[in-house]
Amino acid sequence: MKNVKYLGKHLIAEFWDGEIIENEKKLKKILLEAVKKAKNTPLEVVVHKFNPHGITAVVLLAESHIALHAWPEFNYLAIDIFTCGEKAMPEKALEYFKKVFKPKKVEIREIKRGKFPR
Image (cartoon, rainbow, N blue to C red; front, side, top):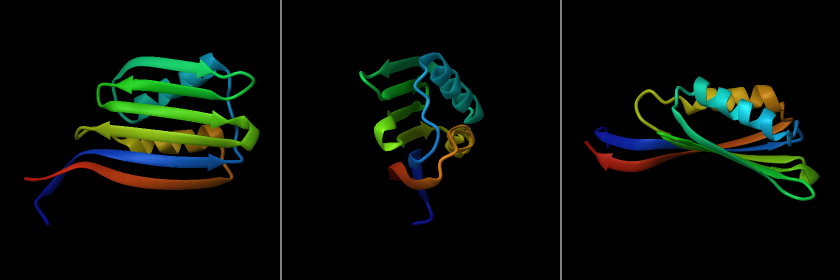
């Protein structure tokens, strides 16, 4: 179908054996920089640190969301980047996360969301 359009793109990434950042202020700064690189509009950032370790950080976007979920005990970071709109560049946010977290192993899946014929 050549006349198909999608409302958004959802990148799901899994990072292993990289840097895990549990500093809430630093993580918030990293998220906001990723948002900027993806040409998105941040609305709100929430960071929750778990006891004894682990962290979830989410930035709500005008274009959807970016979320990070860290399991330091497994040296694992799950990343969701869901964006919509013609200007959004979620790949740029993902490249920035690779630079910051320096994972040794990465798996990425892309899901096109909201398929409809034009």
